[in-house]
Length: 494
Ligand code: NAD
Image (cartoon, rainbow, N blue to C red; front, top):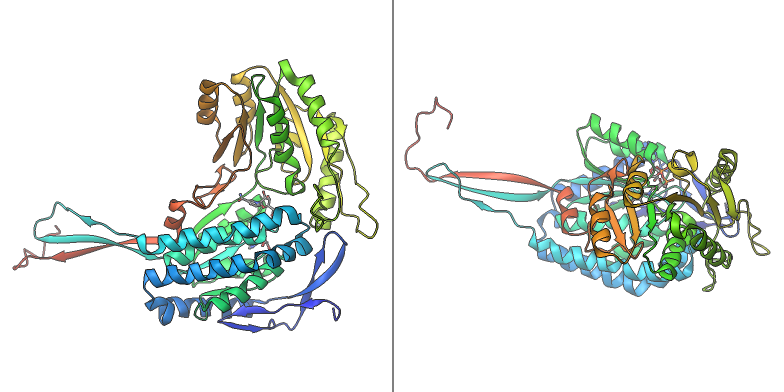
């Protein structure tokens, strides 16, 4: 541990070690070696963090701050992230194995969430209601829900944290963040900027560790709302734990999104869309277009073009700007992907590209998987139904629109879908009939702070991003004022 970069947690505006006095290692996925020591938090640390967040919510500088001042503080934080976006991006490359080419764009984009939601802070308005009751004045207040627990997955740590933190701060909530145990470093680096921006102590706190830290956080009686991004199993457990305290919950879970190519599509663009759908971020994205549905009339031609293009992917060091596919982020994930490749082969899918571990450059670890494409997949196979979360594409043939919709929707998930067609009627019908929280037509992966994002079916609950995201961090209070000069008969409810 002595040769590793040692991090501290951030609670109540102070840096410190965990109460266990222990650390766990964070790995550099490219080198396959530990590079950082992250505090192993305990239930006691969770309690301290939640109490700090609760105190900051109940009284003091943050509780008394006007919404406009909150917005200004958020914009100050946004400007600091902008100044430091390169450095934050480099931490995620080291800790997560994400490509620097992607991270430079992602961390430079994150400030927009704090500008957008900071701008929204003083536009959270109640209403004056023209009620049916005579001699009364009735209005609503939209108030922050309180302390929010934010539990985040490892695949886009700062971005996924930001989707929760920005609307929560705008609403006036306080936060305890628990990043993934695999990628905690960037959240802790981020807290240096929170401190520099001048957020009052206790408004944003970070505890680190795995489910043993996440679970007491969710169950803590002073936590009012839980915002979770992760897998289905973790999501279910979090939902159950939150239910026992009747807490508000939003869940952003997994997907097995259909990316559907019709024979009237611009095939060059569709090939690129299919590649970006599955190989960007080494396939480790919830929105991966991991089921590629191709119309039978162009199946052979399209698959040939796709396989030739995918075969040119450059695997390598994620900190090199030319690298196109980086390592898998964790050894557990690496084994899971290889296991799914075996499952696909055993189910009779035809391996058209890759299909096993890949050799990383000299000096790298062994966490590379070949970009892999399976043909002859039917939608009932496990490789078509289960989330691999890696660079593994399943191609399924379809005949017409009806069949594309039936296959597309025949899955427990409903996070996203892509449609490639130049026919406007078809595009509109597909967008309406696909059961997914996001549908892309002739593009893939577009997400923005302006636009709601979330899952249908078992892909989640609630929406992040866009104006409606703030509603999950607010509750409405109705205020009744009597303007009557006399109290009517008090024994009758009116
Ligand atoms: P995971 O569910 O294993 O872990 C997610 C987070 O939850 C981690 O911080 C983990 O420590 C914590 N956690 C796990 N069990 C918990 C419990 N019982 N109580 C409290 N906290 C608990 O998921 P992961 O492997 O980190 O991430 C991959 C998954 O996340 C994939 O399924 C992916 O699709 C999904 N994901 C969804 C979105 C989205 O926006 N819909 C975005 C990114 C990733």
